[in-house]
Length: 420
Ligand code: UD1
Image (cartoon, rainbow, N blue to C red; front, side):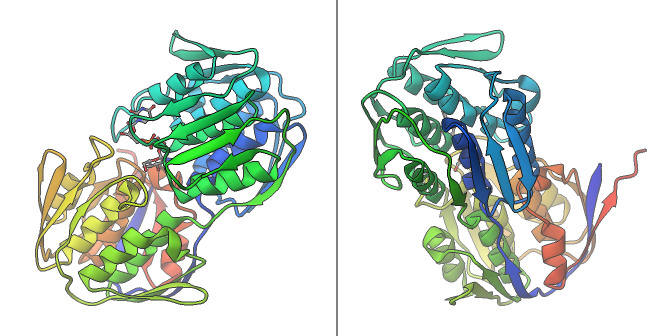
């Protein structure tokens, strides 16, 4: 196993180029299944999660070529409509292959994802949607078995927005007979990007990016070439990194239209944000104004940025509040931050953060993807050496994080963890 070793504190300055969005790339890879032949995907971030998805597709019989930052997926030889537990348990977004398999081949066997560090994260809404489209769905021996001669259009109202649920059913509906309406759909930019790709393939989707998506089913789709949008969470993470270190960082390629809630909170805290032709620049300061943040589905404040903003709150004078409404167990970085000297109290779904904190480096353990980013940011503002253990979580979602931070002036390196 590997760890990151960070010497702080540091002031970051310079430019960083934001990679393609993980959460756009994963559904795009699954969408390639919908067409016979070879699709070419571009601006793909080199991440463990994409490698896992490529293995899911390869087990099905796809010929997948990783030629970073491009991925070629040829579906000509698909003969195994299975997403096995061994892969789905390491990345729950593997379930995104379920909709395309059911739509194109009328059959899918997908392992239930099981537990996840940040909460139970069921897929009942994905399943209910496929059932509404006429599929026969049975859950047996830990697997979801889907059977359908041909899916048919349906009116599906989500009780709450779900990102991958919306994507799965949107993909399934492209090849269904008749029109599907998804109501209370998730509105994330990655869903709009997926719809753009599917429409290039010949799908008829309207309303992606709004709560109502209408999909007119077609008989077949064509392979496609498509570029993923930039990763708004990676961009947000670097902007917070620039802010908390009192630095001056340009996040090249970051798209301000996807980051409104995040930029608003950075500005409210006192960071100077400017939109430039190349991207978004942050100029930090020493002490910030406390914030009150509640996570919400897009266009609200993203749950995937919550852990990083806690570090900004630790640099604020006074009491900040952070309420997590999407996942039930997403404060696992808090005890680690407290070991570094933070004053944080968790009451139910709200964390009360008292600042400013004077953090000191120590060994801390990453528990999930965004928690690992928050611990790295804490390391950048701490006195002395911080070691972030279990960074395989970070490698799932941040491309070359330590190289990009080092290029901005951080003293950070990756080392093997001693086992004793
Ligand atoms: C996606 C993102 C993840 C992000 C999350 C919320 C990808 C690959 N991952 O995850 O980075 O943190 O959105 O923005 O895009 N729910 C149900 N039943 C379902 C589906 C969801 O109860 O069938 C609940 C979940 O437990 C959660 C909420 O709905 O409380 C939202 O989850 P969802 O939007 O589905 O998250 P993911 O798509 O898994």
